[in-house]
Image (tube, rainbow, N blue to C red; front, side, top):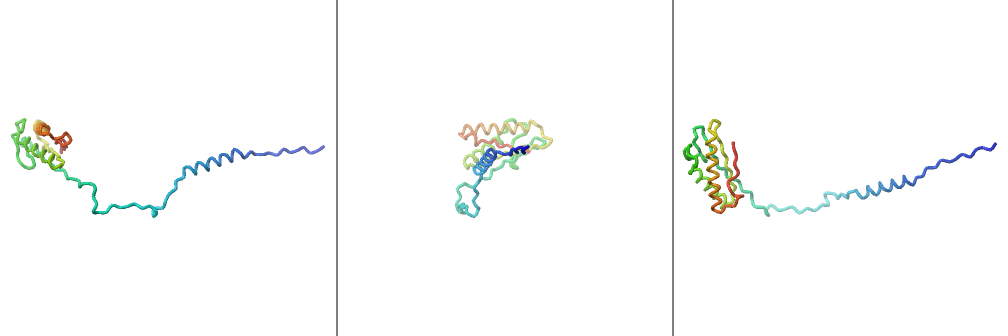
Length: 153
């Protein structure tokens, strides 16, 4: 009896070669070409050239409200504690606002009420600030230059 013919197993390599070529193309396309840092030439600005204007430090108006209701602006006593309008404080804030607008200096308002002071005294100070801002608007100060940087400490 003749020996049976053995069938040879063969593997088709075409799909595997296609996948390898696709991977090769993918990595070639996504590869970055990096230059050495020594090849990069970046002009550095000189110290004498300044295109940006120097930053202006803001001025701060410190308003302290004592437990008795006495209001101090930058260490100077202001109006009576029961006066809702507080004309002296309003005038001082109006002058600071005009100064800030003319010189382009930002003005911060720091309000420091005593822990035992009444809320009414703080509201009187805020009323004076609102009145000063209304007067500044009448004088033609743009809204972004009004006294609105208020800090409570």
